[in-house]
Image 1 (cartoon, rainbow, N blue to C red):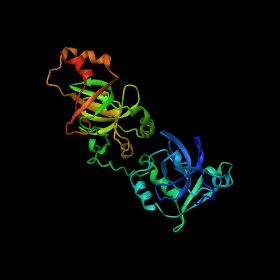
Image 2: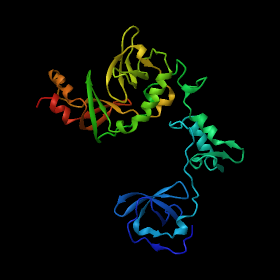
Image 3: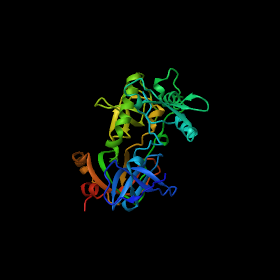
Image 4: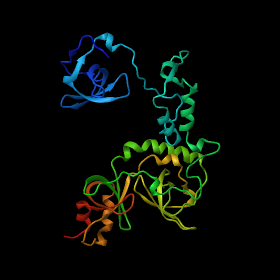
Length: 333
């Protein structure tokens, strides 16, 4: 984009203001909208004519004239009408990568008051409606007449390796919530749980309302379990024996429970996109733990604490840690 008059922006821009700047991506002057102030006179700016975002110094911005601000944008961010609020994954993700760069036609529905908010996207060359394709690919398997669940076969069930885990780096210092202690293991929950669990929780609730069949899990299988609070959570089955309650723990809450099989369901593949939030830890100490003090841990459950990661113990969520908070309670001087 060429600007006839380019005066430096000798003031602080406001949120949402349209400014000009020289892009570091192609060395051309472009338009952008102020998105966020990052400090030290640096702003996060979203391009108006392509899907990029850059961090730009105030000294590199220029004042735009009205005619430059009011030019039609060359980039649209759209939302599919009636689309489910689920992450696009599996075949849909591959399809999207395949159509990136393909020319689309955009049709606005001008017959409705809010028609400008909803658009139809069409692949011009083959005259295929992209909306219909994406809607069908994003629809979860439990809405299909013939489910195509990747974990449907009885010999192919969900294990720890199928679940995303946020890895802890050895020797790093992390802050987490101590949830509970059970049979030598300290269950820790990360701070991302509250911010990102709502979508997954809604999907689990919807699936469990439609899937009425109980499930007999395998040892080590990741399933769905209904806890005493009536809510369903993703669980790992630690000890499963026919005719007995299954010992499980929630990979998102960090709570251990004993559930009957009527409160367990098979986990659909769509619910694997969300990383787990719980880490199982043992204390890395040469000093023995005073077992008579273990009951003291109950009053410290759901307490924030800091610990150092010593080693990953050859499991997705199993670590050796050094934690002065726990050591002061359990290990004598």
